[in-house]
Image (cartoon, rainbow, N blue to C red):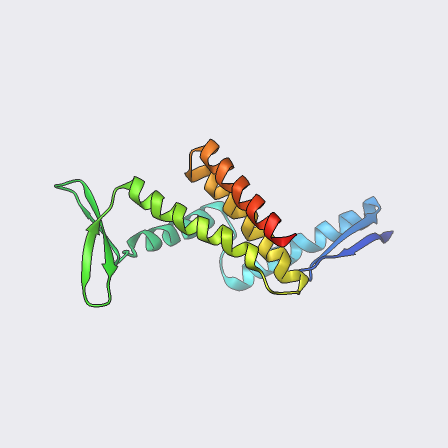
Length: 167
């Protein structure tokens, strides 16, 4: 029986990628061990692992999530209007917003997020990498929520402005 670890690469998140070479006998023993172990655990838990059981559990989780109500949202079926709860310093009010208005608010926040990624003060490589991922995600989302040509123009001007400022 032959089992040989031929490649080993540790990842940043602590996981490992490895390549194991084994002959047919070793593969047979490994699969046999895994199946016997799985069946033993199933018997110990007193239930069988079936697709129906899994589907039923997932459906129950989805139903539980659907029942959770968003307290900041109300839909008036008679008027076909969505209301969102907004808390001001002195008052609390329900505000009706169209989907375009919500998109506009989201785009403004994405623009702020994109600009904030150019103000990274950390020297840690992990923070710099996270910042670059957020910047790239912001660009993708802006391209989705804005007219593509307008998004490209805004992103290009922002990059130019901060590239020039950093030089």
